[in-house]
Amino acid sequence: MSDVKAVEQLVNKYTDLKTEISKKIIGQEKVVNEILLSIFAGGHALLIGVPGLAKTLMVNTISQALGLDFKRMQFTPDLMPSDILGSEILDESRNFKFIKGPVFSNIILADEINRTPPKTQAALLEAMQEKSVTVAGTNYQLAKPYFVLATQNPIEQEGTYPLPEAQLDRFMFSIFLQYPTFQEEIDVVKSTTADKNVTINPLFTAEEIVNFQQLIRKIPVADNVIEYAVKLVAKTRPNGEYAPSIVKEFVDWGAGPRASQNLILAAKANAATKGKFSPDIEDVQAVAEGILRHRMIKNYKAEAEGLTEEKIIAELL
Image (cartoon, rainbow, N blue to C red; front, side, top):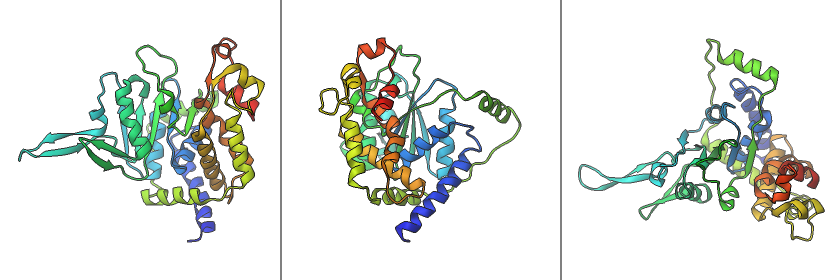
């Protein structure tokens, strides 16, 4: 199949996919779109939202519609790395046998990832970055496609272990869930309190998704678009030559080169799902907020003045 035909097929299947997901998920279009973009661009996503906004239901529904295996891990302070990766046990014939942990799946929901100590968080880091895990000196490859979606509750911070910057940087998108609108909440209550079962049909195979991920990587990007993305990231660095006054005044640390890579990959995915054969500056701007939000560290002055990362990014754009 030619790449042109493959892009057309992706557009059609992407539209069907969003329709299928909307059977269970009402509203939250931007959130669903960013999760899907990060899957097709081969990245991971961090979902931040208060309890009860259907984060788990959303991930479960998306994995069903994509036809992928899904495992949920509830992160707690006593969770050990072996609870995620798996461990070796002695079998009846007194040989060591490896029992795979929940990390061996296509889509992993790491629920409340900041509730577990750094040692356990780090166990997930190798899996996210290398798409493989090492247990007792043996390296095991993970299934493809592989996608980690971690959630955080922004309210309770007691007894939590904030993700270090190096780990936050592993996530392509940081996605904020807002409360539904009044009408959306009415629709949610109607659909979830009635006696009706909704079936989500799988529209893809794992192999198809891997092919689409490879297709998106093949998409060409004009030099001016790459320069725009790199300059946008450079603007977030307070000591850099491109930093505007708002960044110099309110930001301690800016985004690293991984942000530039992710901006281009996500812009490619955004363009492909809209049927375009090359991303333009608008595609970079469309994904910029989710990609830059968690890679900038504000200073105390920004906190004092109530300046959000979103406002700073809007200024940069």
